Image 1: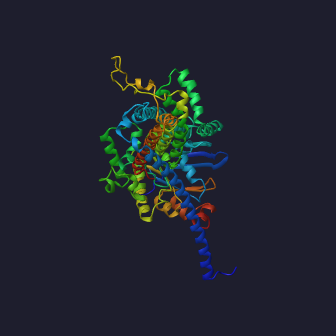
Image 2: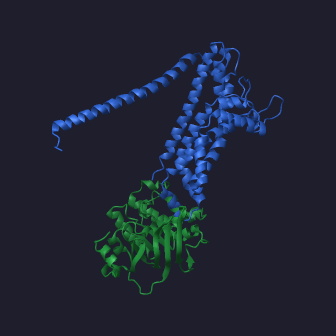
Image 3: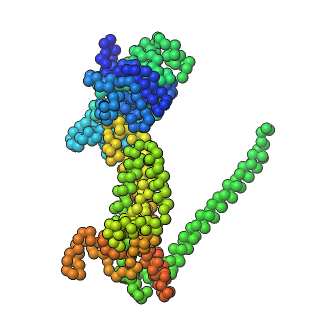
Length: 259
Length: 310
């Protein structure tokens, strides 16, 4: 799929700062996230890419002492996701997340996917069946699990577990899907399956993905942002970032001289 | 340093292995000592009490004649008191532990509460007895009843259940909690669907350890005034009483009672040596009660843990 020249804005970070207690982890980040595109966040360990990602669904609110400054605007309704009056639960209902390590619940495959719907008060068996099937198909795992939906999710392989977690996030039709290094615990074949899936998913949902694997960023993303020491060093179309980076620091990282 | 020759390496390994074996032998000896003492105690009770292991012993009330005396009121009393204790302590302890782990902010106040919960576990049980005598028996007017005893022992084991609940919750990886919150769950939904079910095996262990401690407690029960000689049972729900009226569902909680340890204590303090046989037999029964509680807990824990993997 070609990148259009005038993509719609889905979200935008404006002067975003983030503090773990006293420590400033994100420094004045400004960055657009385009609708139905894959945006990759790359950078060396500790550069703040996961911290940035977890700001979008207010995961930092779960732990004391964390503080945001600035805004993340979410469109089309132009909500500031970080505003104190915006309930983090509402934010998480609109924005799904897939974690670094597959984290299925120790429940059945079906219940894992149905959980997001149950949380929203959906208990109608037929609706659940329908949506679970749809989500599992969307995560390209339906054929592997359709005959054993009642089995424990922990019996699946790592790659299957991660796709199940994607299905869990998809079941509630999120507008934005966050991926926090989703393949770092997987073997190359399972990684390939996830990357292919991300490619499919961007037809339906906007994706923001943190990866420490530059080839992966190049393969799956339309846009790439390079972060370093809590700063957004460079943002642009993926081909441009990888072929002719403007910033010396981006170039050093991409060519392997740093990080 | 010059590299060691093969002989020297072997000598070093041999010296190391000798110490290994020495420690192993010491360990086995210590373990055997502890086990032998327990086995000897149990065997002693079984041998001494063997004359009393009859159905009558379980179905007879206390009596002035040792051979006719039984433990009916004591084992029924113990079970009923445990029932009240569990009903009171489990919801309170689990809720308190859940609150402290999942909801409470970390500050000096929660730290203070935490330290004091640990301290409470170390308060001598007689102190709980005195407290209960003042509060439950007199202030609340609950009298010398099963309810008073159950609540007293509930207080006693509350810290154990709280600590076990907290430890079980802490063993749940953060990524499970985050996974639940990330789909938009509230704290309560996360607790209800994940934290409590996954912590249940650990909570159960704490509950059983607590109850096993409670069932052997004598001092606080004596303090609140359990009877030492009792020849009737608490009224069964909806049974017909002596005066022709029908007992209510919960009349039994207000009934006077005795428990196993008190019965045993009572028999050991009699001058007639024949009662020692009763005491030994009752001691064995008490022990069997505790062990079977543990067995049930281990079984349930095993069943539950089988499905919980991360």
